[in-house]
Length: 341
Ligand code: NAD
Ligand code: MG
Image (cartoon, rainbow, N blue to C red; front, side, top):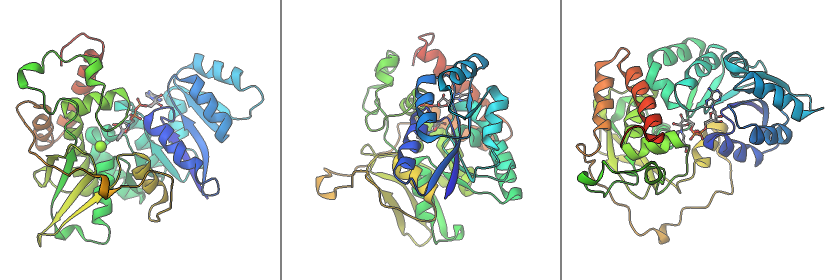
């Protein structure tokens, strides 16, 4: 029985993780949940999965949740202290880090410092402080298992092969909703349009990041820290169908790819069951029904965020943390209609 703490349980990744967990009642047990302000969903999760501990964003939220839970014995905590308590819960074997943005860094760091294996969705923590997180994981002997679909794909393509034989990693990108939009029409994009991703249903922040391709930039830096390759050996290619989730090219010219339907439950499940694989109810990939797998280069002038990320990675130090912070503020302002696309 693997005992899990899920940070960000009410979000897109959090709820998909609980979907996976629900399929294996004798394999996984939920010991702690943490989320922000969605009390309705969190209350349902606590009633369904009966964790020993739950953390919410605010003190008022904690009081309200405690009242709603009545005789349910779950301990309710709140704020940063509560979140860190959930991240280091003595009963947890694996912590799923699925809070969005910079707020994910402290609890992820705390989980690793407490010796937990981490299933990492919160790429921002690696972008901001990859050197600290990976060093801590090395010292503690814990694993940081990728949940991001591209990084899970690479992780799977690397299995059984030493990094010494790797020539480069190729991250695939769908290109988002504006792949074919003319450069001159980019400025007038609205939040509603940008929130419509063609292939994936995700939280708001990463959906905007996917529209600007900043998400791919963050993923280049994430790949650098996860797999220890310099960013000039991490490439990006547009693959609109999102069937090939990423590729590894080896020095002998062999290229390994991982394919599947675009469904986050697959990489989440692999991180939870690693190194095992388990059957599931996710729709199968039907090769006969694929109309084609196509690739194109990124238009780097139309999507300048990608090169900003490469530049930040090369500059090193705190540059990527600055990039991440600037991006989070810009995304929020765009969603609030204070700035254009
Ligand atoms: P989301 O907005 O749907 O969910 C975020 C979760 O974090 C919610 O449960 C929210 O309550 C919680 N949260 C936010 N701030 C918090 C705080 N300060 N304290 C406690 N809880 C807080 O986001 P998401 O789409 O699930 O993305 C989560 C992370 O996973 C992001 O880093 C994203 O880049 C990454 N990721 C997501 C996907 C996806 O398909 N959604 C794919 C790959 C990677
Ligand atoms: Mg991704």
